[in-house]
Image (cartoon, rainbow, N blue to C red):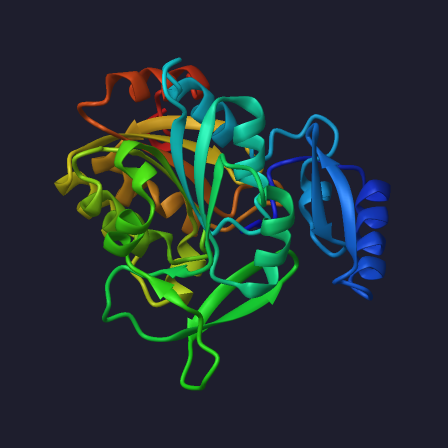
Length: 305
């Protein structure tokens, strides 16, 4: 699922042209177009914001791609679980950059059509047309779409999304027995799903890369601070953070994250991140610790400076 980056600068004229373009494209949002996104051709709905976020020298999304490449050990393909795969942009770019096998989980039928167009027929990709839920007790939900992304809300009517639990997902996709990297972008549900994934693949200790958005997490009904206590209990220790435009920020420890989260609740300037991309590494995973250190050299978080 694609969200809008804010930690980049642009001129007033460029911003005006971009917004006018969005207005025109939103008039015919479902028109299929082919766009080259950071060197990779993709089929997208015309209204999708991804080409705008990735133009020029934007690093948007490249943190995940670089991390996957660093985690590939030169042997078997690095296995990635892409939760909230959207149109397949993360999966396709990872597979373009390194030897990878990607399980793409997408619960919104609208984006499944584009995900299939971008990955279908390629044995490196395994599509799961379901919404990942932490357990079988999860309430039914329905998709709410807008501007290239989808969030889900509790549904009391028919038409709820098909669901799958982590245990069912692992059984259905044998390649995840070698799971190395998890990417989750589910507009607020990440803080609930990521610990559930970590528990079900505790023997693999995968690197956890997810969107940490306080507002959307609370909107979905979750306390975003609890994720850090759950991950700490599972043995995860080190965190690297990027702004939502893909710019590296700092590294810290999991125990400091509840306090550091207050930064995201502070009043925002025009170019300050409204959420972070975070990569969380298990304390036994020295290879992943070296990988995130190379991508985010700064150790001290803002309040520690």
